Image (cartoon, rainbow, N blue to C red):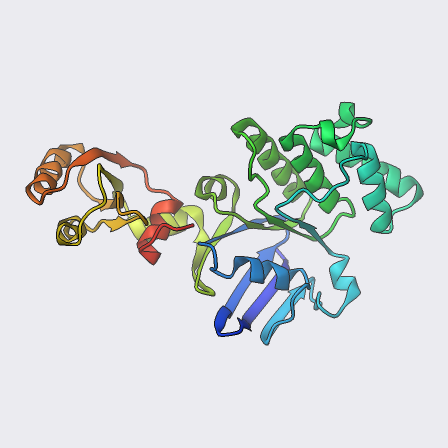
Length: 310
């Protein structure tokens, strides 16, 4: 697959903060790359650079081989869908598509076809004449996405596309994004949702402190950290004190921010849980819950960063 986005050795500093430190990523035609990481990891800076909204101090950004910061033809090949709904609340769904289509240079038959196609993709054909303000949050987000893709870009950049929507609406958005990928659009998806990234992305890139720590396919990354082990999750009834943390770390467990939740790989099975609980209680720790689960991206992130703060 050809790359629609290529970022190489990107560097950007704000005052004393190194927002990007030699970041390199690719997005291929027809694939979804999810960016995961805590607040301040550099994700927003990276997508601004990818959209041509921010110039780098060093490194390069290429959209379809051209620099979006300086070449208009490169910017025509990308669509941007921000976290906040960027539509006109006092216009109908169809009118919003018409306005944005015209802003993108579409006219006549091409514009009419793009509007009809967008409404169909968003599942809003029967809501064409309804004001945006009367549509549900999920409907508005789907409309926002098809607006970003109305001009058939090669690259679509999305920032938290499912924030604030329920499970059913999220599944509809996932289906919409996969439909767009099937047309050959490459998608760069910025999200805090590990489950969303695991279910949608072809590849994920974990960022922290302005760097890409690890990048690859979902199954590949999970197996690389956990192998054939399950993930042990220990939920304490109170944050662990420093003196008791050593016992948890003896089991290769790492904490979330409040130190109530600890997790890590366990090569054994359910038969090992009673002995683990006994050892924890001996150290003065009371486990409100012990469970084994198939490992996911949240566990991978915790193991490589030591802090599940995304």
